[in-house]
Length: 163
Picture 1 (tube, one colour):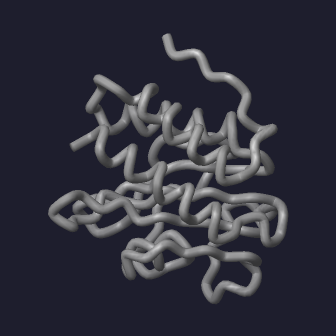
Picture 2 (tube, rainbow, N blue to C red; picture 1 turned 135 degrees about the vertical axis):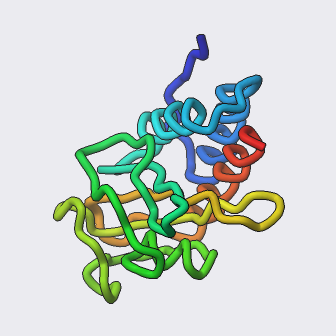
């Protein structure tokens, strides 16, 4: 069993560096994407302050993103590519850093309490899309470029664990 110590006292940059190490240790030796996604979501949920949802949307053969392992309240089940923050991240293959979801055209409100969001596309080594990693907060402007860099680094750890 993997023991997780509290990291919420650390400055943001140090928090993400420690989370990367925690994720590497937590996912080491397992390559199943669902098992690793479940533990990854639990790790981020436990360690990153001021979140109200974090989880995966996985690309299905029909072209939709389907909710995967997550932490938080029940979520939207399917999201079309190009729709909302998750669909936009998937379609553009670029991280979406949204300081106020009310200002994002076409935002899908799965939880009305969400005010800011960061979504990282999950790309395999051959550049195919696995899905997206989605993190929401009830705090406006909760996420910044340090969070973006940290979440992208964490997602690289996740992707390396399933290849």
